[in-house]
Length: 365
Length: 98
Image (cartoon, rainbow over all chains, first blue to last red; front, side, top):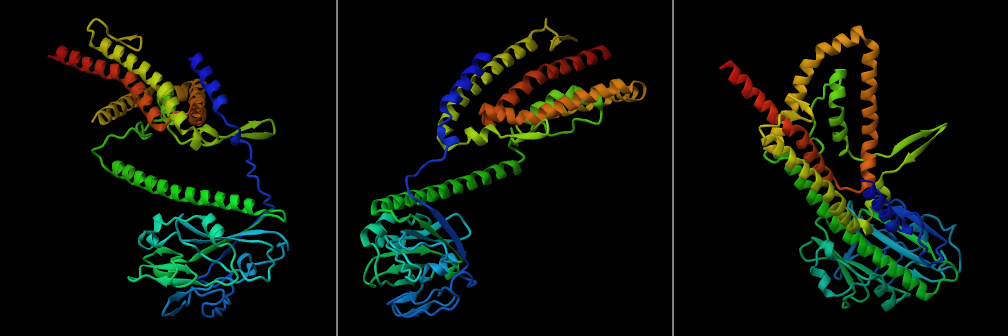
């Protein structure tokens, strides 16, 4: 046992990466990041007066409550300056480059983001958002398969002086299209929604100050990072869906009385703890039962202060990059314990079958 | 099925223990309260161990499934002989009665 403990500790020390405790330097001069929330549907945060004019500019900031519709579709105006997005311009520095993201979020983890770099932004500049889609095929794709590249939007089109974003409802009214440029262009993204425009109920805007020395390559790297984040979000959504499905399966199993459960309610019955003697006799069973409880950090009192001991799962075992090692470790360490227990069980059963032996745990009956 | 049987056996044993030990427990608590206190301390000690047990297990890195299997096997090893000998005892009593 000592040998295995030694091997375990050695492996933990080897595999415990520096990332557990160290911050990663992503290599950007990100001086500050602003986050602002604007609830468009209630008209707070953004300019509440929709002064949208047709197509040629963004002289308006709120159109979601009353989108303008003409023969080209439903037009949606966006905030025309950062002032309306972050609520204040006092922290913006002239001459700095700001990376601006606008998130459209529903009440689930799915996030769609618009990204545009805005070199040498001054708060009086109009913020002209553009969305660049990846092609016509997106129009038939469902909500969760929409994907697009941040670097495409910036690399291909850069910053434009005038732009129009259109929100065009699709033919059956279950979704809408964000469109930029001429109506003949295929620069759009399709968002599927069964709830119409109420889909866009929450907006989240962020502005990353990349400093005065930010270069195009730095911006491009940053957008790549954001692209990776976006992809990770999409992957996380898929995993959450899987978890949901798993939880449903577990719930179904719990509710199914025909299925044996090997969960921590295995010994969930009265231990008669009021009876002191019974408590002593059943104490080992209670201890075993507690081993499957969910780990909670423990506060260890030391003199006049206390130290919080975090769970091993929190600091190491639940990390994504040690999942394979955990599987290996369970196979190795857990498998060995299980093997020894099975061996012991075999001897126990063998002894039970032996008529000459009549003892239980060393007690002669 | 196996789970239900094992659970029932444990419940039965716990119930029998309670019936058997209740008079002794009452006697101890009235006649020898200090001894009763010492048993309570043992209980408290195991309760303390239970508080730290899950965090200890969390550092071992074993998944819930693995722990469940280990506990199941361990419980089986402890209770199986009891069950078998209980069965033998019942047969012995039945033989002596008949």
